[in-house]
Image (tube, rainbow, N blue to C red; front, side, top):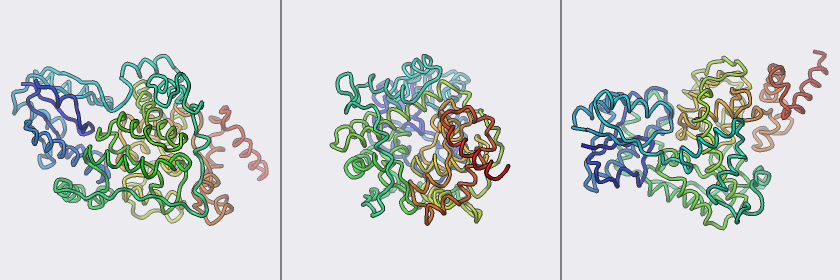
Length: 480
C-alpha cells in the first residue's frame, strides 16, 4: 500500500499527493514531545495543530482515508511514524521534501528500517525550484540579495516590462523608509476571525497541555485554513498594501501590525502559496513602490534566505564576535523584566508574548539590535526566535538571525551589523519623549560600547567607517 505523510508545515490546499490516485492513505503526526522541545509560543502550536486537523477533516470529507497520531498519543515524531508504518501495511511512503535540513534524512532512515520504499516530492513552499536556487548559489560564492532578487525578477517575469524592471527601477527601498506622520494616519484593523469547533478544541488542549509555554492559546488570532488565509491576504491587498511600502520600516509603540500583511505564518506552512501571494499583490492598483517592496520580501528576501540555508550549513554554528551571554528567563516567560530594559525592547517583547509576532523592522532593529549590543550568544538568540515567533523555522531563522541580525558570520549574509543607538529608533518610532532622551538612553550607550568593544573586528568594514570615526572621537574627548 502507498501512503502519504503530510508534514505539519505543508498544509496546502492542493498538495500533489492529494491528486495521486495511487495513494490510499494519508498520515498526520501531531508530536506532543516535539512541541515541547523548545518553549514554543502557544499560538504557534495552535496554528500547526489546527491547520493539520482541518486538512485531515477536509480529506476525510472527500472520502479519503486518514490516519492520525494526536497530541494525546504523546509520541515523538519518530515513534509516531513507526507506529503508523507498523499498524498499516505500507510498502511505499510519499512525502514532500522539507526545507529544514535533517527532516528528509530522518524520515528516509525510518522507512529504510521498516522496509518501506520512499518517494520524495519537490518542496512547494517556494517559487524557485531547488535545483535552480542551488545552482545560483553555487555560481555566486559571495551572494548578494540584490543580485539574487534581480535574477528572480528576470527568471519569473514578475514586475518586469519586457527586459526592464517595471518603473525602470529594480528597487524602491529609498521610497519606503518613512516614519508615521506626526498628525497620525488611519491604520485598518486586522480581520476578526471566528474560530470553529476544531480550533476551539485545539485552543483548550494547548492551554492545558502547554501551560508553561509563552502566550495564551485563548487569544489565538490567525487563519488555519487555505480559504481563510486567502481572505486574509485579500484584505491586506485591499486595505493596507497601498501604504505598506512607505511605512514598512515605521514603528509605533501602540500599533503592533501597522500596514504589514502578516502572511508569513500561513505562507511558511503552505496555507498560502507564493504564487497566490504574488498574483494578489500584482493585480492591484497600489503604488508600484508598495507592490515592489512587498514582492521583494516574498520572492527576494524569503527565497534568498532559503537558498542561504541550503548552500551554507556552516551558518548554524558561526560566532564571529565570540559572544557568550545566555538568554535570561524573562525573555521566555515575559515575567520580571529588568526595570532598566529600554522602552522599545520592553514594548516589543510584551507584544511578542501576546501575539507570537513582531514585524520585520522590530525584529531586526529592536530585538536583534539589542541582543547583539548586549553580547548574547547567537545560537541562544536563534532558539529564542524559533520558540517565540509563529512563523519561525530553521530554514529562515538560521540565515536571518545568525547572519543578518546577529552578524555571527562576520558579514557574509549582511555586509554590516544591524546595530544602532536610540536616534534611529526615535526617528522611526518616537519611542522616547524627545530626541535628547533617545540620545541619552541606555540603547545609545550600548551602541557606542559595542563599536568600541569590537573595533578590532569591525575596523575594516567600510560601511561602518563613519560610525567608528564618531566612536573614536567620543573616546578621545573622554581622554580614554
